[in-house]
Image: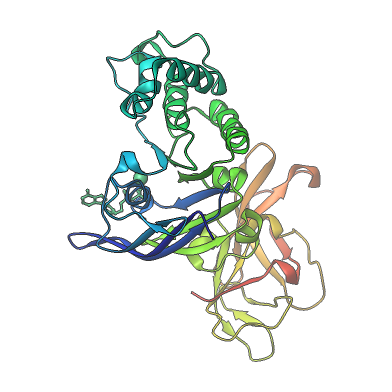
Length: 349
Ligand code: ADP
Ligand code: MG
């Protein structure tokens, strides 16, 4: 049985459908990232699971038990808010101890568990500090300690790394992953950062308009996006419009070329995705899966360059050019592009 099951969850705010008959299962001990654009329903989903928000219809089941009517503090899960929501007048130890105190955990045990939780997030010795005397990263850790101290089986994290700068963000991401392994709790972490979603998760769920449009291991979702939205949102793939040519290929007028995937082209294919880093500046095979274009822009990105290449039929392609392949061609150069059949991903919608 999954730890958490969401069944046809629906939540409306006036005209807005924040959650639209959303289904999702989360396994015990799993690290799931929820990825989606602003307004796709990520926070609403967590708030409904935590009990701060009520669904209009559908069910939230924890190990098969329906949580409707169970108040937030009585749910065996915890939520860490985007804003951290620390009590400003309480010191760090009191903030972390808050939930335990409310549950009537005796003083000695409380102190021991607060100490453990602070050690877990690297804040030993900070118990007496007030939140305003902490850095953003430290406040984030206090919020995390407060969420972990009750040893929840499920922890909900709403953009927990959002307020951190890039370096701290990466390090804290790894720490979160380690904490998740150590505690054995399932984590559902919201992010709008695709790198983060891919890097940390056992599985990624991509939300669009209040629905899960794709769910799977990071590599699978990245390599085989199911929809235009996922293809572009994750890794900014080229989405090429066209139509099946009836002979196993996909005619793409914008490209002035035919795309040919590895297997059969699924009926109803409306477009194909092609990742920038899968396009080489040379043909890789005879026949299809090759096109000509003119370099319009070259952007150096450190470990590679991103080229914008105008193909014969007018489509503008994003093409990755690795540093080890030498200097990128200059603006205005005519280039021949090629890619493997395996890199062509037919999209249904
Ligand atoms: P996300 O976290 O993915 O950015 P949210 O879950 O916060 O998205 O919001 C989903 C949609 O529901 C948005 O269109 C948002 O404006 C709307 N929404 C969320 N909460 C409320 C609210 N309390 N009142 C009105 N509309 C809301
Ligand atoms: Mg949000």
